Amino acid sequence: MSFDVVCVGGGVATLSTVLRLLKRAREAQSSSQRTPPTVLVIDKGPEVGSHILSGAVVDTKPMANLLSPEEFSALPVFTAVKEESYRFLTENSSRRVPWTPPLMRADGLPIVSLSAVTRYLAGLCEKAGAEIYAGFSAVKLLSENGRIVGVRLGDKGWDKNGEKRSNFSPGPDLMARVVVLGEGACG
Image (cartoon, rainbow, N blue to C red; front, side, top):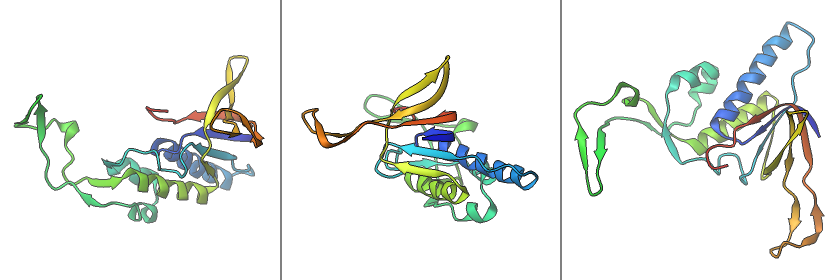
């Protein structure tokens, strides 16, 4: 199967990249006769967001630059940081540091479920034209002449003893002009 862009991993960074790419392609398309790029995102989890760290404090400026005002207002936010402290941790306790470094200040910023944010971004990406398939692991980068040209998905149909079942199918190759690896720290 061949695509313009194949993205491995369905996290916030990858989905933000896809959304920005497709929005810019749509803007460029309106001034020319180009067709939009074909973009595929694969994620190893059973659904996008299922392998994402639970929660986070989010700086809203990058999200506001990425999303339209309507999309931004629908971002799934639980609450905002109302109180914060910076602590020095010891083996058995902690001590409050009297100041918070500027880059660590989060007062007023929203607290979100990253799983909910990735599901929301995935929906926006699909609406913009991306195809997203969950439950597929990339097991190998494919290269030609020192250039990454695609990924191979994992085989399906092995039994618990490592034997091929009757429904075995080898993992297909997904070829692309651009491959984005957004697999995350544990991938």
